[in-house]
Length: 213
Image 1: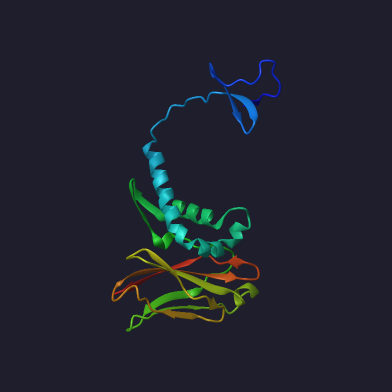
Image 2: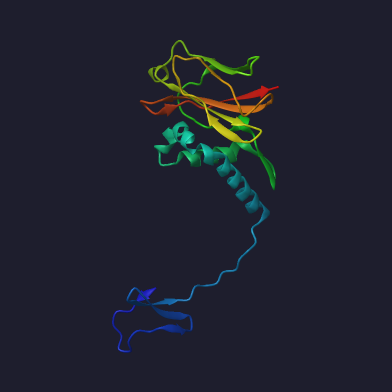
């Protein structure tokens, strides 16, 4: 696009060949007509990738703030936490054949970092349907692990609703919760990880599958 500053013939408006003259905010200018490009139908591979990307983005959207903690170390390196999570989902956790894809929750990562994982992490369901998550701390824990906090997220398989667990201090090795969203049966996917608020370092997320029967 070119701007017309002085012309013995005055401003030029309209279309001549592939040249268009016009005026915008008291500025006279000329430009060439845009070149028309042929539109090609996307290939099946392109449609498949777009479908998987849409699924990964939809999975991460409701837990964006949680991911900002889990992948905070990556976010400091000019890559957003959500982008890291979506990339991991596409690479590891989405399976199936186009157009029917599913998410393998056991391969989903909600955090990653250099801190050690929780030891002997397990889940139990009490008689009253209380869910008990327990783990152990290392005897030779680093300073980061000693002051770390344990974050958790759960996903209900039935209605695909996420709920965050209460944050726990480092010296706590158990968390209990009941779930009003499930009366007697159903599957709950749970992820836990450590986060050190001082260094902002995390551990890789760990996955548990809880089955209520």
